[in-house]
Image (cartoon, rainbow, N blue to C red; front, side, top):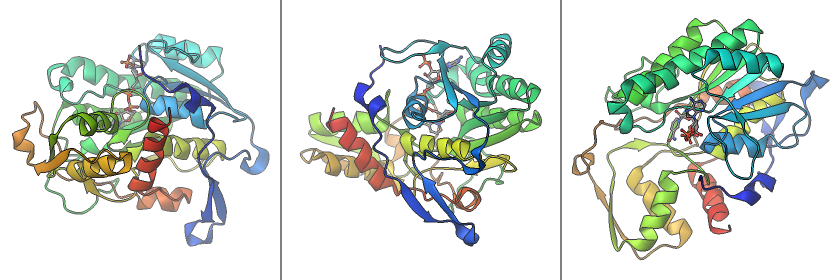
Length: 338
Ligand SMILES: NC(=O)c1ccc[n+]([C@@H]2O[C@H](COP(=O)([O-])OP(=O)(O)OC[C@H]3O[C@@H](n4cnc5c(N)ncnc54)[C@H](OP(=O)(O)O)[C@@H]3O)[C@@H](O)[C@H]2O)c1
């Protein structure tokens, strides 16, 4: 059974952030808007992988929308409604699109176990590359929109020291990153209207993730070693879900097909990330030491620098991106106030 926090589904705690958009495009409300521009027609939106981290956050942020959201996954989850859909099954996807008159899909499903992927290449390719193609084909048939999620791990093979841009060549270091890159390519080739969001270091109150692991370890271990030679940016899945929801709710996708980078603001290492988790949770007894990645043998070499440049996202959609420690604080507060 999955761990989830029931009252988070009732939560409307995202502060509305109103700000001026760049290039004088006017003011946009970010968060959980209850308005839409130009009174556009309501839409049926299908969310895949709805019982994962991002999918669960989509459930939360879309509450109150005039659009109808249909939440799907391969298995059920206690306490919430899930329609079963396996995204490797094109026939089943097409049937669901027809039955529910689906006009947009948000694909939160993926093979996300980076280490295991190294020995499970075929299935990883099926889920991360072929399945997004299935979704693209189904949306293309009805002139719909595919919102697909990718990863900073499409980069890493080169020694970067400046944030990666959307049009930069992919240089994955492992099977997970490679199959996610194939997924992006398949979506692009399909000629469907799409938004691909590459994100990074995702955490939330749901499922297993680094924040929850470190909350546990920093409160139970007297000493911890954490790598400091992998640098990137953590992303609170709630923030990414809010951004996707706002774009859908305000019909900001028209004319904006393309790849976008979305992580929280700022840069950190896993070591520094852990130090802040300990600080914010009050777990200050553990001695946390920095170490090199070679001290933790792993089946895959992870990127040493995979910071994403979010300029294109901010300029296109006019949204502010929360700073990583501010978002971490919100997530830890939620986790500790269960
Ligand atoms: N997690 C990260 O750190 C991270 C970083 C960068 C990018 N991303 C990307 O962000 C997206 C969301 O990640 P996440 O962490 O929210 O993922 P997640 O928690 O692993 O959730 C993925 C969901 O997809 C489901 N699923 C598996 N096979 C499926 C199938 N055949 N059909 C339909 N659903 C299926 C999973 O079910 P089961 O659990 O039952 O398999 C799970 O509920 C993914 O595209 C991921 O690649 C994640």
